[in-house]
Length: 377
View (cartoon, rainbow, N blue to C red):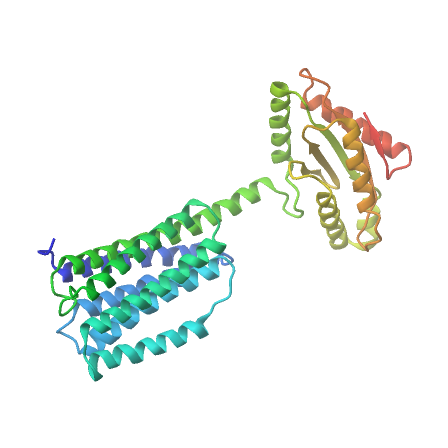
């Protein structure tokens, strides 16, 4: 392993940085603008690429470029990646703090390169700084990143690279730092190889996180009503079929409620469609607030909605209907009145079409009896 040329390994890291910078830049252009952080993720490999170019040109360029400039760009790229992660997860940037870190790093790197040239101390300081940045990002992801695979992948990469940095720090204290970065050694090659792999895996992790976010949003758009937080008709009927299948296997079938806003056409005609849309959104939010976690609400069409209540008989469903009526009568400017038709699962032979027919007939009965009430079918 000591026969490996550090310059070649640094060039490989630079190639990986360039490749991932191009990929992430394309993502930034074509992904929705509200998915934040991709720009910073795309900029980070550019800084890493510039850093590897300066490191590789050691001896051909002045030391202020190949030492101070290269180290500063590497630190800047890592901080930029961290800022991209914060932005992606909806947290404010903290460039004031990290700008101070960069200023301190510039002063220390300059002093240890020209004022008091000392490779081992400079390497130790650089390793500590990188460890702090990676540690800060790991802590942030553990607290705010969730548990999906792309985030876990980045966390694992950070843990592994932190381990390599600690091994590198230990090798420095043990006297195996060498005289310069280009001196072939097991520890140098281990670090440079780990760095090249980290650059690649962090960029892949960023790509996967953005792609997973886009997939989640597209799935939400495919299953939810475009105006309200309710499911759309297709997704709701699919959920009903799944619940009926579960009931046929294990018993304890669902109840269905058809809900229709009373005199909604008059609201649109007198107050305008924008006010009508606001009423619909408010109605769904208030209704969802009184439903259980497993209950599902969907927009069946226009001002008509449907609620499926898993494992609920008609008596329990009536209590839910009463809560809906109560939550819509609190005096909010957007409050409305609703008629509800309710039916419960009648056994293994019952079908969704049959339940929908009974719920619809019960809804018409509620309207015929004076509206703003619940009828059971």
